[in-house]
Image (cartoon, rainbow, N blue to C red; front, side):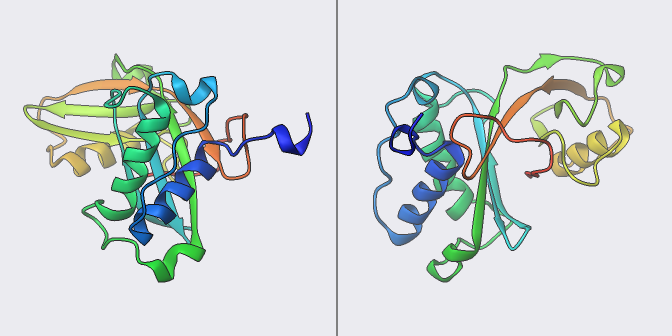
Length: 186
């Protein structure tokens, strides 16, 4: 395959969308490729000098295609993550991006989790916490579930339901192949 036939991967596309959103311009249309045309939920994670800078996503598809889902979540990750101020134009050169495309989630027991393989969703009442898989420093089920519970504001001794999902992680510069577990999201 020649370099001319290689299109940017999901993470490169998401970063382009972020740069457009921060500059106040509309995001480009998604690439016309099967990957972007299917429906799927995703998370867009931004880092600044290796530190989390924004991470927003969906657990179920909210848009008609993955491409549109990436546009939506890139915008939210850059400008609407409540943990951070909106990304400024001055920060754009220091950002890196990854995109996690989610499988449908499934109910499970704690014994069915593996933080290296599965992301986790914890729910109680109207509260829900999510943690992506394969995050640096999150090596046990207890740590993974504990962080998700904390994010949701659910007490660890309260009753809650657990769901798991897998992701295909895409990093910048990787047009078609998923990234490995060494990238981290929020």
